[in-house]
Image (cartoon, rainbow, N blue to C red; front, top):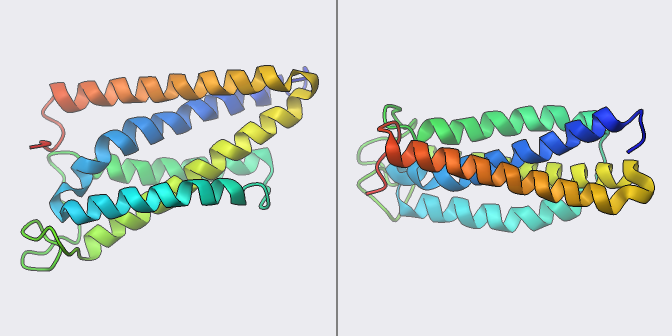
Amino acid sequence: CGVASARECKWLLLLQAWINILQNGVSVSCLALAAKPYGRTVYQAAQTVSLVIDPAVSALGFHVPIPAMGLLPATILMTVLHGYILALSLNFVTPPLLTEGFPGSASSSHHWGPGGLLLVVIVAVGRALTAYTKMRTNMFLQERAGQDAESKLIQSGVAMQCGAFSGSVVLYLLINYTGLFRSAY
């Protein structure tokens, strides 16, 4: 990156780290716990939808450009959505829209109600924003780097792995060594 855009490149690398903290730390670590009150089917649906959405939205990012600062609102919304998943996985949070006797309540693992549907939609939108933002961030880094594009993409990969690692370790420790989260059993 040139001198004028060095600050923007640093911001984009920090953004890559933050996105991967959310994706690998919060989404991967907390989704099963957040979906537990709604049943196994909700968890499976959320995982399946997110895995289908990821490549589709990444490809869409080539055709739907936004300016680099347009990533900020996407990141804020993504953070809020992942915050919902994190909050829902906490022990002391009562799952919203979970009604006893309603198909999809904790007593039923084959059907799900409005709370489960809300969680699946939040996971889908969060994953779509994650995939789009990661792809656009790499495109911005590559564009601004000029001759140094390969180096910036390597730095992006390092930032992504550092974010994924730190998010996973922190959530692993919090989930397994505190009483804050729902039990996995």
